[in-house]
Length: 244
Image (tube, rainbow, N blue to C red; front, side):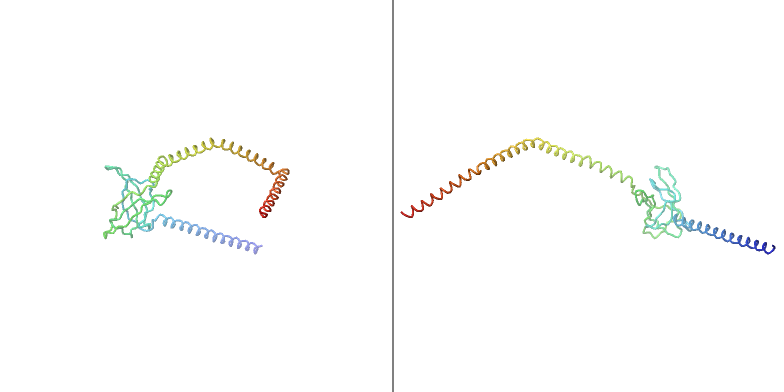
């Protein structure tokens, strides 16, 4: 009995050890998953390492949000940290940029709003300058508003509307008038043409009947006799001419 009890106790201890190992492995897997997710998030937001703040001011920040990427010559170097309205002579927006500290920016660089597509988020694209002087931390970048995709679409829609109203619609109306005129002419001239065609067919049928009557059996025999008489007459004339 004691031996059986010892075996049961040892089995329980082995089971507990296995459970502890399994829990440890599960915990490590969860920690690794969270770590990968964290580093992936850092890579996506561009928040790796120390960052330096810069400023850019825009008249319109439609579609721009904190966290939007900041690109330098197409390469991501940071993100938008904050957007603050400023009222002076006119309303403008101060956009704070958190950029990589190890990325020098020439002080004549230009920051511009950019959208890669109709449904894409707006981002800031920095075009590097040629100056040998680098922009100091907290300095303001020269800025220019980007092309508004929706404004461009509205302008294109207005142009298409004008084109349709001034060119396409008159052309369609003229074409419709011509088609109606042709259809009216056909409707007016077709019935007499059909009637004349029917009369012509009737006359052709009548002429065919007359030809059939002309070349009937009796007429063919009469014509055959006439031709025989003509041949006999021709022979007599030849004999008379030979005798003379």
